[in-house]
Length: 101
Image 1 (cartoon, rainbow, N blue to C red):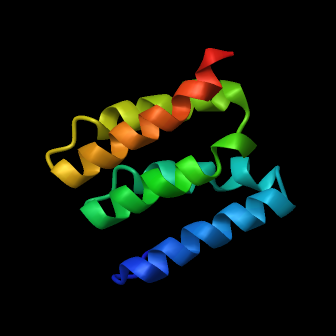
Image 2: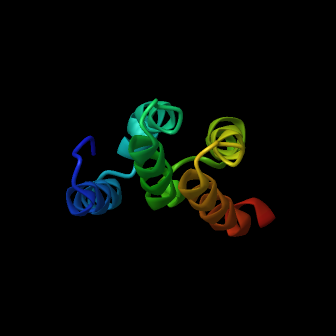
């Protein structure tokens, strides 16, 4: 997920989703690294962190979503880079259905 090529990062996110489907508890294990990526110096890594976190949302316990993921997404919504803010808005939109319950 640290590659400079967007297609490689996208494939890494897709693989992360597949691994989370096969091993649902693994999503919570990888979550701290993804959250760290959401505040990385590189805007590309911040975007990848947001996308990867969204990809595994359904495998993360709701209490972790509220206490860990939501603050990270809200922080990303104030990012100085417009593309990061756009992806943060998309990520927050993906949280909506999970937080309705």
